[in-house]
Length: 264
Image 1 (cartoon, rainbow, N blue to C red):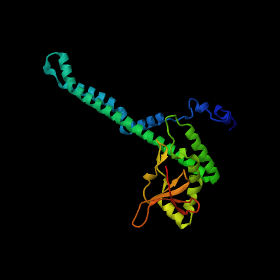
Image 2 (cartoon, rainbow, N blue to C red):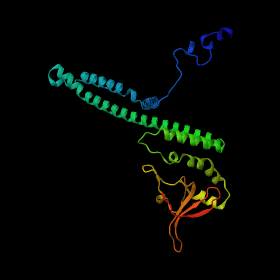
Image 3 (cartoon, rainbow, N blue to C red):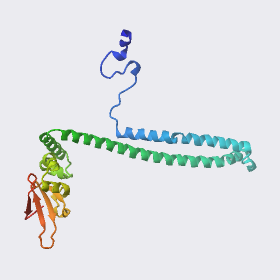
Image 4 (cartoon, helix red, strand yellow):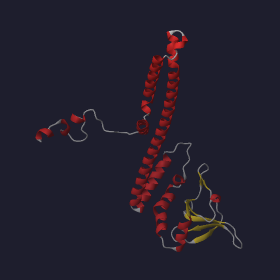
């Protein structure tokens, strides 16, 4: 055993690339391009596409040989004309097979790219979901702080021609909603709160280009959260004997109030 432990691969800690591991490198920076190539290789292996050109050439040689032996083109006079006559049909078959192989290659490349992109998206989505779960498992205050930080930093990284989405435009109010208000709403036993939770549609529609809240685009009867006023809000249409309009709900007591002079 002591002799075994003296071998190069046991002499140091970390990643060992000596002895039986010589020439083997740890996989790093597995890129989208590498993932696409792996999918393409798997598709080629499963369909036999990699052998298509070799098979077509083999078939061409066999058919040509059979034609020469069988006397195909023998009536054309010269030896060259005879050979050309014997290769005429095999050549047509070869070109057709090569065209088919090219089309199959294009299809495999496209499918590989699509699978690679979907795989990358799935990985990124899983990372985001894991990060979100990690943050939610923290205390609400810590979750709030992390949300404010990440949204503020994300807004700071926008290019000059890019406009922030609602969560970036209202970083603190939306973080407050996600960390405190929404979790509390989901747990409440308050009848008014339960009604809000059942009709909640998220944030008020937001016009990114003009950076304005679009109250007029709210679905009638649905309830939204307004990060500007930091209240729940509902658009109620006029009905027989009752004036409609906008109504707000307190995010803590869920008390309903008629809103007047609403501006976006």
